[in-house]
Length: 103
Image (cartoon, rainbow, N blue to C red; front, side, top):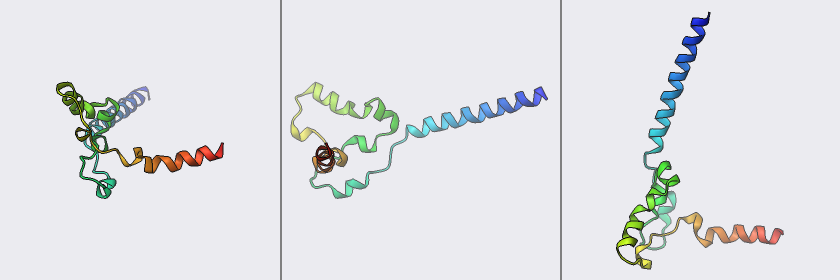
């Protein structure tokens, strides 16, 4: 009976390890395009964070292009990308106002 238990533990460990590696690899893949890209008001480049994979988001790797460009020359407004829809005042201000009037 002990041999069966160890085999079961080994098999479940191998399956769990394989699924963990698969999840990690899938987190490195790029996210699909944001639905807000279709409602852009100007022709500015969309924020690369929207399509960055999870690992790139938590390490801020998606910002490296802007950091290197800013290191070489001074950044101007035209060098910056558009904000995410959720970061714009149009989306944030109503939520803020709702919580502000509650208190």
